[in-house]
Length: 626
Image (cartoon, rainbow, N blue to C red; front, side, top):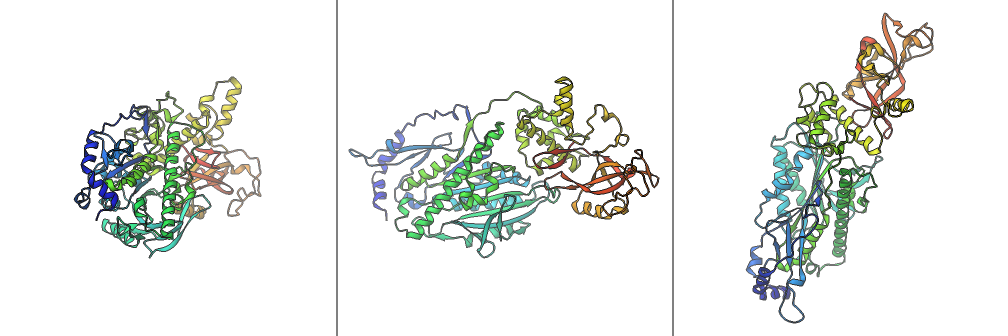
């Protein structure tokens, strides 16, 4: 049975159709339409307008949301009774623009292929992909999300992606400021920040999956435990946010951060007419949902603005992102925090009910979607600078890769088939390494080193620091002295022309060498095997240069009976030997710390090659470079 307001719409449906047919929208005269601005490439905001349902059409209620032909703009016409005369739509018509707009005829397959499917290889390659779905209860959100989840599971598990991954799933529910583990009988968990500033879901259970059916089984089991409530539009409206996290671990690159795919079904909003029977508890619940969605909007926009500034090379203070103001955004801190180095891609799908009776809620949904869009000024091509990677186009980037990636050189077409300098900087580390390793003969260490070198160049250009090799000879003797001091941040020999001298003939204090531990270095060999890497050491001095009281890490005398000040190259048991400080792997990939007081004697024949390390002031670590 239709309500009074619905009966008004039915009674004037014919007039409404005539007014909509006569409506002539004003041209979209925006900067984006003129090509002066572009949407954020990292966040896609789209909307799906579901078809009218059979019961809505049987009542004679018309559609209130109309998509402009060949655009991503929707016109929403609300029929209102004028003070005098017949009902009109002109004063109450609104238009909303999103990045992609899918009409009633669009299938879920089209939506998936267009905006969701690209998140799969992105997360598989080590990035963070996030899908948000929201909308008024009864707008088809659950139908859309369920179908998208099935297709995500299919693409993750059908073996079409290159390489192997260990896949783990966890699903939590966020109700107000409380979190529950939906795969562990809805046990309450805590959302906490650890000492490194990372958000942890303390107490959540992760489940390893290896096939599509198991993955979908966990998703369906979680859905059955989710908090729902009856509304006028839906008997099982979701009253909480569900966060499905799929973590992808790459066993071939243990040091790389895991790829993560988030599928987030947000709590359904309600039209004002659906709230008339709410008690105090339900009203509080609605306020908490609205607050969390408002904070989410601010966080998405803030991160998009920060990404736009980063791509444009701006070094100003990033926009404030209030991710700590709600449990939802606090859980997803590493997505929204501008200080996070993780590469993120986000898709937002706003599900819209087109029925004219629900036009108020539909306007709110579309308005929220439009506010999420960040349209930034179209960047002007910057003048090419060989020391500034964000100024490189694809050809210039490929040339740099060919000249700086070591031996054998990495195939630039495999590493950067289409990317520019700024785009390659945002490529997740595992994907960067996987592309580099497609070149025969390239090792993981070489691939990580070229990635570190690219980032070091980018960071130096952002700090406004000239590279040491660019400053030599600019200011006469004084400039050369400054350049030499800058070179001392790297373990390479600062003198000119030494690269032509074999490294074994120029061993010196401060040189870093890779070496193979002998039987007397059992503990060093065991630690290296556990860490999955080689042994590296910093040369301190020849063994013969130390006095008789110097001992190595095990307490053995380094130069028994020796006299301090002996000539370099002294024989120890018939072989050249050097006192060295051990280097140990640090937290960041390809980073090391020097254990200055852990000293070992390394013989010449145990040394494999010179290794270049560069000091980073910010992290206090040494990084391997080409």
